[in-house]
Amino acid sequence: MCSLKTNHDIKLGVSLYCYQDNYYFHKYDLEGCLAAAAGSGAEGFEIFPDAMIPEWPYISDAFVDRFNGLKERYGLKCVCVDHFSDTRMWKNKNLTDDDLYERGVMYIKAAAKLGAPAIRLMHDEHMGVFDQDSPMKRDYHLTNVAIAKRLLPVAAEYNVMMALECHAPSSVDDPCQRPYLEMAEQMGLPFIGLQADFSTYAYCISSADVGMYIRQGATPKILNFIRDSQRDAYFKGEAFDYDGMKEKIDKMGPNEVDRKAWDFIYSLRCRQPVQQSTTSSGCGRSRRMWWTIFIGAVCLFPCATRFPSSSRPGSAGMKTSGAGGSGPCRPMTASSMNIITHWSGHGFTRAWNLRNSIMSFADGSRSRRVSRWRSESPSGATKA
Amino acid sequence: MYDAHILTDHDCRSVWEHGRKVGYAINIKINYYRGLPLSCVDEITLEVDGKKVDPATMYVQHRGKEFPYPDILKDDFQTDFYWLFGEYLRVVVKKEGGIDQGRHPVKLTLGTRRSYTPTMLSTCEKVLTFA
Image 1: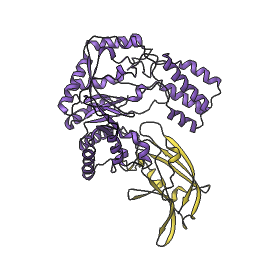
Image 2: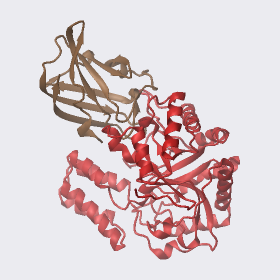
Image 3: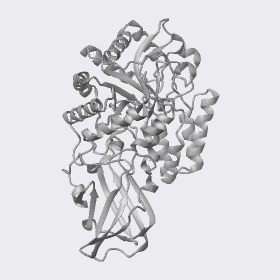
Image 4: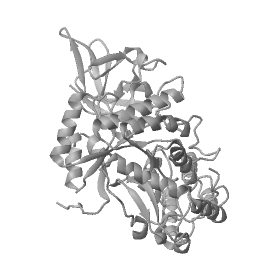
């Protein structure tokens, strides 16, 4: 067995979503997924309740008994429960804010019942803020700051951290995440943190998306050309020219599905190569943030993270509202992942860490950083 | 997502009651990356042997409960009854005489309303073997 267990403060965890195909095709059941996670050397896992809890949205005591037994058997800790904002679950109306709040409470209680220290909160800005004409723009909202504010005391009562999912094309350093942290600071209840989805490191459309659009009738040649061009630009260290690409596609005779795919790609303008010089500037002291780093293939948990000044995140250049998205972003390099973390299974310790992170966010260096974004980011990148 | 797999070979068969065939059943799976409440199902359309199945004769069976298909489309259908990721949803078509044993072409159109992204419609055509 390839063991990835370490003595480091940061631990390896696996989102059980990684085994989605095996689960969907009934090759693994819940225990199979946990066994696979343990076999990979993980020490923690994230559970998808509406896939793997049989009575969901209810959780029976019998299930909890079995669940605890499985955790014990495989030496795993449930570190996160996935929260969803099912605003459109009714046919004829959207959930109200009160409904969303109650759903949030349900997930917090579920996490507490399962012994998980965090929920992955699907907040309204989990994919950033979309332009009005973006196909991803919603005419309803998910759990927003106001609802999160109502949830905060409940999270504190149950000692469950609400980890904001920061998903591509947003990122943990997207300014739109900040109101949540500031709200938690104002409330004096440090139970909101940031969870970096590995999708934030995407630099091209995924092969899965290419396949999906091809099945819908898109032209493989066009989509693969776009993807290859994105990869090419990234590895050459060049900014991807979205507008130029659009002209090239128009000449290739795109069909309706191709255009739909392009709209999707354009709305999720992937991050651009990072100029190292722009990522290593900044103040000379380290700053501490409270993060849970998850998702994708693996999750690294839990975490007060510390970015050395030489490897701090670059900027908010992935902001979807930014024209062309050409701002500098975090590199997926050893330096960006060189996060010194602090494994703390105890709620008080976690709380203390977040408190410090918020304080560092609220100090003067933050405003300097914002101004740096403003000066370096493309237009609109600091809207939030 | 999973469009090619929403129609399954699992337990396709005539349904018997009191010694008579009263219909047939097909098991389908969700076309999404997670489970959804049954209230998020917007459409289940079946074509068997090239003929569209009358929705009024369709019943959805799940977790020991049975709902007439038109009922799950109603505005006030309960939201705490989940069709979990990977779970079979049994669709029973009431038809006197059931279905002949053997292979039948089946087409399924499944529309699920994602709770936070746009609705997606999936279509799957397969030749299924009925018992």
